Length: 409
Image 1 (cartoon, rainbow, N blue to C red):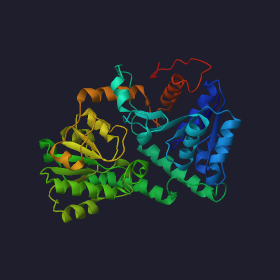
Image 2: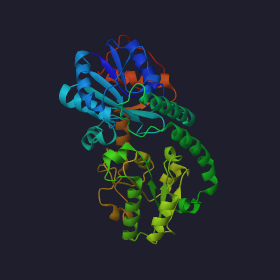
Image 3: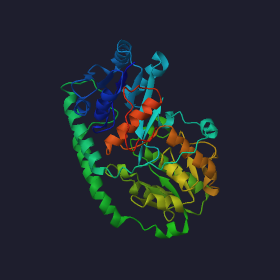
Image 4: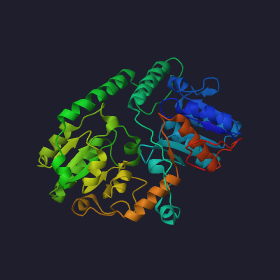
């Protein structure tokens, strides 16, 4: 048995995880990196740099896991080219266990780690939730705090290293998004400025919130893999148009609030696009666009939530807001989301069973939601990850560490 790590989240999390696994696991631990950004965030003495062509990655990966008797693969997500191919080989051809990390479904104090895939590929299903009997109590949950500055630094330094290393060491590397270090730095700086500028320029939705006279549409990051791989939309603008047209055709008399994703603040602004589309449909008096309104307050007050497949829906369940998911989502199931079409949702927002919602959250807490963060409290997070993998029998530990704050006993 042995463990293999591929690309991780931005920052030192995977390097720290690799080092800790080497200390605690009884099996060998391997790491494959793909560009200079990965190298910068890895243990250089023990990592293998794959510098071949992307089309040769599958054969290289197959040989590697056979030669090193890899039984468990850990990676951040399952939609990046190298991870998608690795998962296919693991699950279909080689019988190797593939675990994918992702941002927490239950934010902000959790990360996600699921076997087989995440988001639209998540193994969570209605039957498993229905049959789940345990009652989970998150009494030991530890808050992870904000991490905007860390994420900005990690993103900029990674892009710089990866970009300048492409022509030197890994000219064939295929990244999952454009590597533009100058623009990455600009976007993060602009996000910081916009955060405070929008506080002065945002429309006042207090009256709508007090009266609950609106539907909420939380927008997702413009280059979200959830849109590319798990929805019918090419870009966020297509979703916005679809929502506005449906809202118009339903002749709904309520209002509509589009909320911008906080991590996309520096990249795009949909204000003019939404204004023009709403005006063309005669909806300009019913449509609002905001950035930093308090999300729990909006969720408590709204009549319903419309999303492609954003995990904001899980917060909506907690606040008992009806949800309509129009893309492929692991949480789109009877008892949680509206199962009719979008047009009818505007007139009859329903579908949420409060007891089933509580059971669903408890199920998630026991199946792949790990208290911690990729960007802060790394000792806590990595300890919880290792204990979870040991619980899943994906790794074996030479010792039985006694850690403070560990979720899984």
